[in-house]
Length: 89
Image (tube, rainbow, N blue to C red; front, side):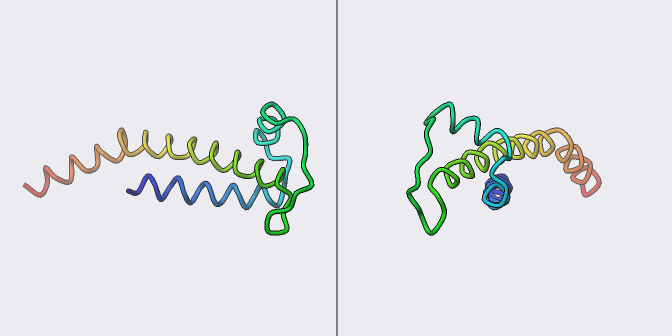
């Protein structure tokens, strides 16, 4: 459950950052490779191209941060949990 919160928080953070600064890699490179052309269509006042790039960045950085969190939880925080359980017994 905490992992999902970490992913969603990171997703929305990088979505907002990318909406402010479009050049944040790798979203624009992925969009150019997949779609290749820009559109002037607006969604809530934001160009659809810019929104798609922001979503790509949100997902990519969200997965990266979630993976780092998962590794830390598995290898670092689990040792703390094990020592706490031993001390309580």
